[in-house]
Amino acid sequence: MVVGTHPQRIGKIPYFSGPEVVSIRRDGHAPCMGESHDLLGTGADALARADWPAARSAFEAAIAIEVTAEGLDGLARSLWWLGRPDEALTVRERAFGAFRDHDPRRAARIALWLAGEYEVGGNLSAANGWKARAERLLEDLPEAPEHGWAALASARQTGDPARAERRSRQALTVARAHGDSDLEIRSLARTGLLLVTSGKVEEGITHLDEAMAAATAGEGRDLETVGETCCDLILALEVVGDFQRFAQWNDVVMEFMRRHGYGPLVAFCSTCCAEIFAATGDVEGAEKELTTALRTLQDRGESFRCAHPAAKLAEIRVLQGRFEEAERLLSAYSDHPAILRGQIDLAIARGENRLAVSLLRLALDRLPPRTLLAVPYLARFIRVAGGIDDTAMHKARDSLREIADITRDPRAEAEAHLADARIAIAQGDPDALSLIHASITGLEGLRLPLEAARARLLLVELVADSQPELAALEARSALRSLESSGADREADRAAALLRALEGTGRAGPKRYSGLTRRELEVLDLLGEGLSNAEIAERLFISTKTAGHHVSNVLMKLHLKSRTEAAVYAVREGAAPS
Image (cartoon, rainbow, N blue to C red; front, side, top):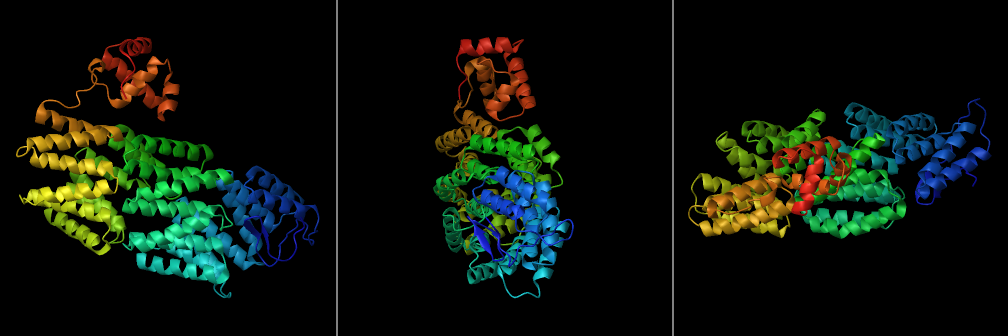
C-alpha cells in the first residue's frame, strides 16, 4: 500500500490521521515513497488485525530505512500491546517530537496518551506536564477532536466531581460534532461513571450501557476504547452493587476479546473483575483473578491501570484471616494510595479500631463528599468509631443517610439502615431489629451475600438472649454464606456464636484436627502426591505459602513427612471441600 497525503483509515484503527505523513531522514533529504512507506502500510494493517509482533517487525523495518513520525508512533503502539510499556513510552516521546512542528494536533494526541501512561505509573508530575504540553499545542487551533480528548483527560484528573462531569460532557459534544467514535464512546462511559458516583444512577447506567454497546459492536477504531469503557462500567457497578448487569455484559465482552486477541488489558480488567467476584461471594474466583493479574503484570513489567491487584488481593487475605500475608502485600506497596482500603480492613480485622478510625479519616478526606464513593468508608467508620469518637460516628451516620436520601441508591440505603441499627443498638432503641432486617433485605436483593451475612451476625448478637431460636437460625444462615464465600475468619466467628447458642456449629472434620479450609485443600493435594510448587500452582498461591501450609498440616496432624501426610489423606478419604 502506498501512503498518500490524505487522511487514511486502516481497518478499524485511524493510523494516518494527520493532513500529511511527516518523514525525517537521517541525512536530512526528502523522503522517498518506496519500501519504507509500504512497510508503514504493512504495520498499520497488522495493528488493525491485532497482530502485534508483525506490526512491530514492519515498523522496525521501516524505521531502519528512514526514521518517520508514523513509523515511531506505530512502533510505540505495537510495543505497548506486546507488554513493553517502558519502551513504548520512550519511542512515543520520540514520535511526539517528530510530529510537534508539522502536525500539532497529532502531537497533542500523543502528549495526552503520554500523560495517561505517566498517571497510570503514579508519576503525576510528568502526567500534568504532558497534559499541559498538549493543551498549549491546541490553544490557538480551531476546535478539533483533540480538544475533546484534552477535555476528557481533564475530567479524569480533576478531583472536583462537578468540574469532571462538565469536562466529560464537553468532550462528548466535541466527539459528536467531529464524528470521533472513540472519543464519543469513552466520553459516554466517563460521563456515566461520574453520574453514578454522584448519585444519578439511572442516567449514568444508561450512558454506560450505550458506551458498552458501541464499544463491543466495533464502532470504535481503537481497541483501548473497549478496555477503558469496561473499566468505567465495572467501577460504576461496584459502587452501586449492580453485579447482575456485569454478568449480562460479561459474555459480550469476552467474545469481543476472543475475537480481537485483546491481550494486555485482560490483566488490568482482572483486578476490577475480582472486586465483583469478592462482593458477590466468590472469593475463590476473586483470588484466581488477582493472582493471575499480578503474575501477568509482573512478567510483563507493566503497571496496573485503574485498580491495584496487590491491594485487592490483600483485602482477600484479610477476609480469609491470613493477616501476615495481607500485611506483606500491603507493605510492598505502602507508598501507593490504592492500598489504603486494605490497611483499613486489616486494622479492623485485628481489632485495632483507633488505627482504623485514623485511616478512615484519611480516606474520607481524599474523597469528594456526598457521593456514592464515600459509602463503604462511612459504613466502616460507623462500625468501628463507637467509644472512640461518638460525635464523629453520628456525623458519619448523618452523611451516609444524606447520601442515601439524595441518591435513593439501594446499596447506600441498605448501608444507611445498618448504620442506623448500630446507633440504635448503642442507644437501646427497639427499632434496631427492624433496621437490621431492612438492611439484610436490601443487601440480599443486591446479591451481596458477604455484606448480608455480616448484617446477620449483628442481628445474632442483638437477639441472642431474648430470641435464641431466631439467633441460631440467623447464625446458621450467616455461617453457610460465609463458608461458601471462603471468608474463613468470619465463618469461624459465626460458628463460635452458633456453638454458644445451641452447643453445635462448625466443629470441623473430626479426623483432621482443626485444619483450616486452606490446609484441608493442601492435605487433599498431598494425597495426590503434588509438590509444593504444584500445590501453589493449583491453589494460585506462592510456593513459599504452600510450604507454610504443608508445615502446618504436618504439625497439626503430628506427622513426620509429606509422605505420611499423603498416606493419611488417602486412608481417611479426600479432604472435605
